[in-house]
Amino acid sequence: MPPRIDASSRAEAWFLEHGLPYFVDDVRADVRHRLRRSRLLVVLAVACGLGVAAGVVVALLADRDEGTNGFTTGVTVGLAVVTVYALRALKADAIARWAAGRALGSLGLLVPLATRALPMLLLFITFLFINTEVWQVANALSPGVLGGSVLFFGLAAVFFLVSRLGEELDDVDDLDSTEAVVAACRDTPVQSEASELALQGEKLAVDSHVVGLEKANLVLALVIAQAVQVFLLAVAVSTFFVLFGAVAIDDHVIESWVEGGADYRLGQHLVSVQLFKVAIFLGSFSGLYFTVYAITDATYRQQFFTEILRELERAVGVRAVYRDLQDHRHEAGVTDGGRPAPPAPAG
Image (tube, rainbow, N blue to C red):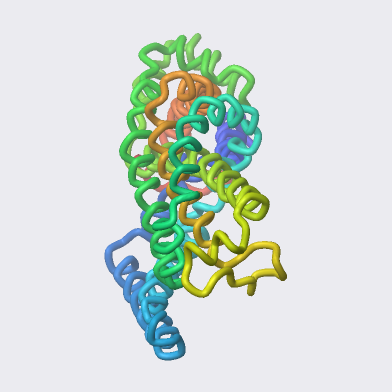
């Protein structure tokens, strides 16, 4: 196998390992094919059809006062269909695995974030937690409405992440010199090729600008990494209120707050349904708060994003070398099997 073809293969394997499938030409071409309007219309039609069917069935089976379960179920099923298509057909599973791994590997950063964000949040949320009206409102929420509320908070958090994290990538692909590209490729499979191309006078920085699906790949990696940490914090807050409520909120207090008193269908005198609903509602709201705080707090952004953006900067540097290797490969007119190479796909 020619050295440059071997280097291209090593770069592609590195991209896939680091959650960047859209940086690989063949994968990106396949994903672009699956994103055709006709294909997406079919997926949306299937998602809407299954969502409506599931919603109607649940609404018919549910009690009259819980009829809103049908809407939430329909939306959840529709989103699940789209998510499965994205994970399998659009290769988003590779992005999710890498981003989740990076987030879990940075759990130590949750402590400084929590120590800065939790005091004021808990002061406010704890006041709501012991508020009669909050328990009455939460108790009146059907499972469908409660699930819809959690879904709304989650979608709002994702919207904030997508709208703000794109700004974090402004400087990642700004490798304005060949030397910067070579430095970014250090300790990667194409380190020697980057140095060699630089010695040959190749202007690697010309190909460092990331657009299209590749830019979407970087944004999605950041969004998933941040969402994992926010989710863990929201779960921690919900767990805190479940434990705090089980210890501090007596059944007589719940009875004075909520008509009918405590309902222990979730466990014999451990966690009441009302306590569970309040904890889930306040925890999901806390997740939205954490999201806004995390993307606006300069200290946390510097701590969390510095390392992950350094990884993405390396990816952009490897991409610049990979693009140059692919150009030489297509100029030579050969593929891995010695057949004529097809035209290089656009970014």
